[in-house]
Amino acid sequence: MPQMSVHPYREITFDKDGDVDIAQRERLAEMDVTDLVMFAHGWNNSPAIANRLYSAFFAPFPGLLAATPEVRLGYAGVVWPSMRFTDEPIPDFQPSAAGPLPGSGLDKATRDALVELFPGHDGTVARLAQLLDEQPESDEAFAEFGALARQLAEAPHGGLEAGFSDDLPYDEQGPPAVLYEDALTMCRRFALALEETGEVTEKEPALLSFSFGGGLKKVWKGAKELLRQTTYYAMKRRAGTVGELGLGPLLGQLARSSPDVRVHLVGHSQGARLVSFALRGLPDGVRNVKSLTLLQGAFSHYAFAQSLPHSTHSGGALRAMEQRVDGPVVACYSRHDSALGVIYPLASSLAGDDASAVGLDKRWWAMGHNGIQAVRPLVRLTLEEALRQGIPGSGCVSLDTASVVRRGGPPSGAHSDICHEELARVVLAAGRIGR
Image 1 (cartoon, rainbow, N blue to C red):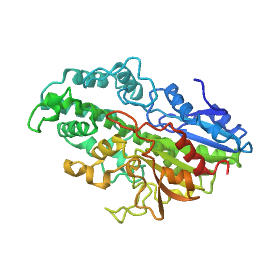
Image 2: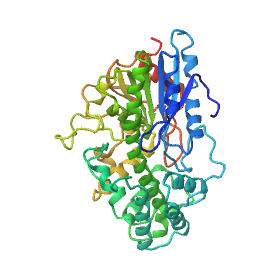
Image 3: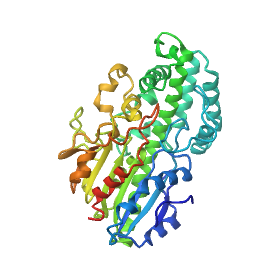
Image 4: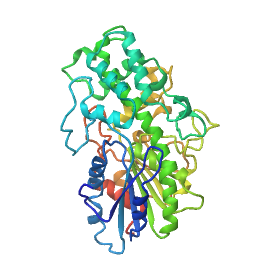
């Protein structure tokens, strides 16, 4: 295991179906702690990269608790099979040694990650990479690319349609455009969205002015984003599964083996979705989760909604689940997160939606873009207010952290800018650790 900034620390590994490493689960139960902070990553190419994130995020905690020796804080990092594209910038992390290829292609590290993530699809990944490299100017090539990308996003059981049935953990209200819209149309939309995030530079003026009527070679940058988003949908489904079928039951077992340990869940991006869906998997009566802190959550801001504004007879996928937390649910968000503010709404919108209105349509906004919505009561705070006056002891809280979550280049913006002492203080305040 890579060097960790804190101790005691345990790693908890789940497979894609939510099955946990038994030996790691037993070592977790043996920790002699009063409080346990469990963090689930979103992006990841390897356990080593995930541990670097955990080490950086956890580093401020011991100093912040130096005056409270009665608190014995333990740390756990949840490792689950997800991935990121290596062209996604991560503040304070060194870039991949291989580095991304220029233009729209897939570098070797991303190709290898896709093959590892989707075993048996080596040929699919190779063909996707070939199309991105060659950038053929034909409708047929984009149709083939879209079909291949969607193969990677197919549900393990029953195909894509199964991912949207009522009994599976989805927070959207139907199949998203990224999986069903005409591929060329989506690639064009993504190319324009990337322009908005600043992905397109002054060196590429042709893309800035391309029209929907032609210039297909210019649209291949949008094709790479289509692949990224269809891959993220596979990860989104997996995050819900690992949370509900894996982490939730594990927390129930921990409540039995270590009944006095106070658990504080933290998740970033799709890891925020994972720890949130763990609430659905908590056994009845389990009350050991004392806080839930969501950092740039890459799932619907209506997930906890009692009633959806656009469909009042329906609620969010996590409706009333905040009541399973014996403390607050805190959703941190930032306007500097262009991955969630620009790309996410487009990817989440339904096929046939007007592309020009997607960014204004609040149905498709993410929690990490503007916090929790359509929940009552709901407290809204700035980061400065929360650190000065504290965080409510229960219920949902939307916390504007844009004052620190602000660094990062295109296309993701500040999506991964989460390793700050101020956010560590948020976790401690939410869990009333040391108070």
